[in-house]
Length: 254
Image (tube, rainbow, N blue to C red; front, side, top):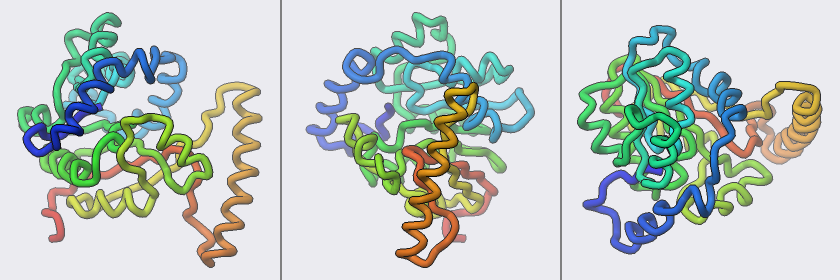
C-alpha cells in the first residue's frame, strides 16, 4: 500500500496511513495463501508479461511480496517490490525476500529506476485519493520504457458486492468501474488499454461449480443492465477488474 508524495498529502491522511499500515497485516491482511497467489499470478500477471525474463519489473504496493516471489520463481530475476507498510515488508523479509522487497513509496522508486519494462499494482490504487491515482499513474507511464506494461487490479464499483469490498478495508479511498479505469489510463497517456474481469479461477470440482453459478448469476445481471441501458455487451460484474495498459511512446493527449 504505497503513498505517492508525502510533500502534498494532508497531515491527517499521513497520520491515518501511518497508523493503519503500521499494523496492516495484523489488523486486516493476515498472512497470504501461497496456493491462491500462484493461481492468480498465472492468470492475471504472467499472461500479460513479456516472454523475455531479462526485464525490469517493479511491484508497487507489493504487500508481503507474494507476486515478487512468483515472478522470481518464474525466472524474472530482476523483479522487485516496494510497500509503505513496514509490517508487510517485514513478513516479506521473513519469507526470504529481503533482497527483493523494500519499504518505500512508488514515486521515489519509479523516479530512481531510470526506466522499467513492467509495473504491477494489484490492490493498490483503491488506497489512493483521486489526485494521488493520477499522480502515480503519471509516474508509472513516465517510468515505463516504450512498449512497457502496467498490470493493475482494482475494485469494481459495478459489482453487486462492490460496496462490501470497497468498504471492507478502512484504508480504501477510491473505487473504479471499467469505464473510469480506462479513463484514468487514457488521461495519463496509455493508448492500448484492456479491462478484464477477475472471474473465479477453476482449479477443481468445487471451484468449477462456483464458476458455473457465478456465470449464471452474472448473465442475469447483464440482461437486467442491458434492458435498462440498451447496451448488450461489455458489462463486468466481478468484485475486481484487471487493467492492462501498454506504453507506446506517445505523449498524453498527443
